Image 1 (cartoon, rainbow, N blue to C red):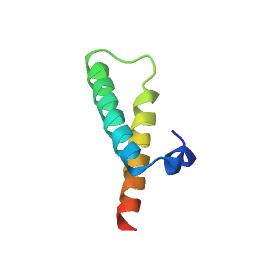
Image 2 (tube, rainbow, N blue to C red):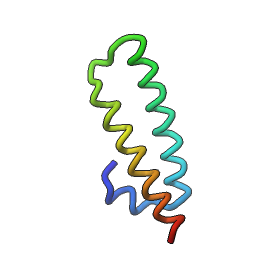
Image 3 (cartoon, one colour):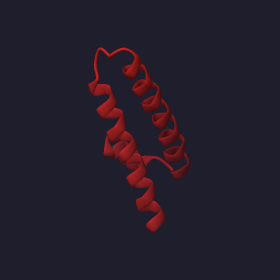
Length: 63
């Protein structure tokens, strides 16, 4: 997800997406441990999306 898309989401949607992305990251990480993924760059992309979502949530809590 792009940062512009993340900013437009509501707080509830952010929390929902964060949970789903964390679950998919964990699933991909486990699958990669068993047998290498065709595109391991997926792990990096999902990890960075999780960080973007978490950062936006934290930013909203501070305000």
